[in-house]
Amino acid sequence: MKKVFLPSALLIVFFAAFFTSCVKDTCKNSYTYTLYRPVYETVSQLKANIKSGSPEEIENPGKIVILGHYIFLNEIEKGIHIINNANPAAPQNVSFIKIPGNMDIAVKGNTVYADSYADLVTLDVSDPAHVALKDYKENVLQFPYYGGAVAYGPQYKIAGWEKKDTTIVEPCGGGGGVIALERGIAYLSNSGNSASVPAANNSGAVGTGGSMARFAIVNNYLYTVNGSNLTVFDITASNGPAYVNSTTVDFHVETIYPFQDKLFIGSNNGMFIYSLNGSPANPVKVGQFTHARSCDPVISDGQYAYITLHSGSSCEGYNNELDVVRLNMLVDASLVQVYHLTSPEGLSKDGDLLFVCDGTDGLKVFDASDVLNMKLLQRLPIGDAYDVIAQNHIALVITTDALYQFDYNDPANIHLLSKLSVLKN
Image (cartoon, rainbow, N blue to C red; front, side, top):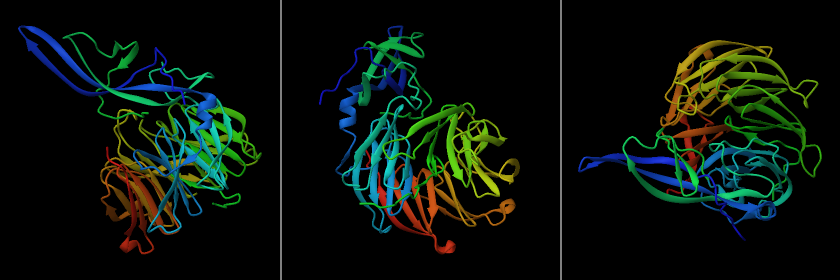
């Protein structure tokens, strides 16, 4: 397989170290970078490699979807792990599907829908060990922002990234945000945050996604959010989704959560409620709740919406809290309670139990029977928790170091069932 490095490819840079030295009154700055240079393949090459292979180690886990006794776990920008979870105490990594640029997943029956940068991939997973590509639609999603200079089009697609460490020395006062380097562009970042780098039979059942999801399926429609838009695909036909339409929701749309005939969409600015009643192909905005600018996953139980806000440079906010919002007929929304947390992200609710991933504080489990006075039942110190799905008395939690499963049949004795560790580089 021939891989191509385009001569003017963008070099995406993460700041690693900076120091200043003075020698004989000559001031110089030394910058050390890790550079990620895109590797390109033709569309036919890329499509030929989208298939299942041997299971691989989990290194950089992202979104999760559960359907039947299978877990579909995103490996950020690389593909999907398929995990047989028939025995939650001993999950088995079955196979890995290579999908460059993959960040999101939705599952219905034996079909998986996944993004590959701006393209939409449809897979037949009826045999998880031998996954087959059913459909590949180009440029129907929004391409990630990489400084606005990465080439991606009909001739070449990004298939991976080449990593290279480089040090630059320049006079004091020079440089700044953008530096010409190796016939590409280097962007300085001193934020300290890493960016994105490079036999089942479930009939027509729809997989359960986490609260960080940007893909959602309701009946015969796939809904995706990205950037500022809500995009609708008709997935009635078995040969692949058909684009229906796209509508602007808000700036910095982040997550989507389906509940009954509503879509709850989270953005940096708030929560937006869209109705599918009578017009699933054309969702209609019926309500919203705005808050201080912050990252914003949202779930609902029909009576209330639960929104986590967390700070960070990408979120452009400073709030770290759980907002409880009362819903009137699933439309009008009003804030009823705020709980201050450490750095909350994904969340899930099962009955009166609310599970919240609180960053380095791990997973927190609340008694939410009284939303005005929720009680912390247990804090599970499992590292930097990102997202959780709680159903059938098992909480599946993704963190930076492992995929955990907890039994909560007895809320007073929540205990670990299994742990699939993340490979540490």
